[in-house]
Image 1 (tube, rainbow, N blue to C red):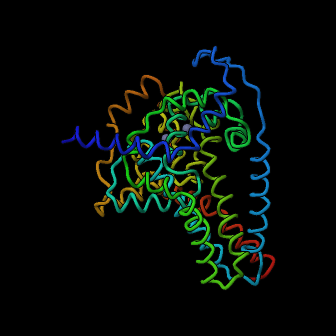
Image 2: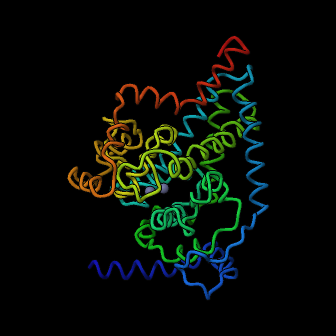
Image 3: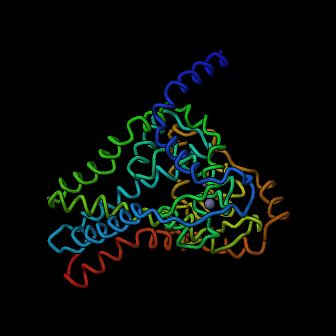
Length: 380
Ligand SMILES: [Zn+2]
Ligand SMILES: [Zn+2]
């Protein structure tokens, strides 16, 4: 029966994939024309000349100009109620959780299983983040793990902070990214009808969930003109969230503790843990990518709201089969490749202090905004 099911699924996939992946085909063809096929895939010195994609540079610049304008009109205008920015912040967190618990821990790493209602919710949240559809997100992320900090890593941190943070979006991808990208196995991701649905209707879903819902929610609750709601609750929220997410690829690969595996570039970075709501235990995550908590300890011992969310879903019966390595396995890895002393230093932080500082950093934008409003307007 299973065999039959798989065959049907494969047949169905063959019918759908070519129609749904024209961009992927273009993506590959575009690059293939620039690849020197005589170079072996694993050769480190593949000829590569940096090529700036000016269209992306311009879009990125416009996004940031729009974000500054959005922040000005929604956050700093004393005529606008203080909770306009709180609603925008709520949507930012809602969307981020779709990436952390959804495209990252669930679909990319299969670190736990989720029932249909949770997968639909995570898909909705993920769409709101506008970070490519789940299928593409998983391909890039699996590639990042498989070839971390090499030329095949889309956000190769060896090319510097700016490149791994956002520069990679503004230059043509390295040929190795395309070569190795084609080898990434994604049939399990494609097998989920929720992923296929999102990919099939990605543009209308983005317009609705990324654009219309946040704009109108702020509009109805604050009475602020729609145009300003859009720039504040969509453009500013989006740009700000992207920077917090990008820190995982940049700062958490460059600065911090390598306490589980010193041969891995990714690091435990407390600042990134706070900005990314629990994704900055990055040396651990690259050592044990299939841990649903993306950290050795759960939320009860250190700041990790994303794990708290998954645990809450498990209590409700929506998440199950949460995967976690045993303490013995973790300790063996530290003994072999890690640094026990660094680990002790890193975790030598009081849990209350950890959460208080975590929430201050995580809510920095709101705290900063309210302080500015208080100083200049005398009220929130
Ligand atoms: Zn990483
Ligand atoms: Zn990962």
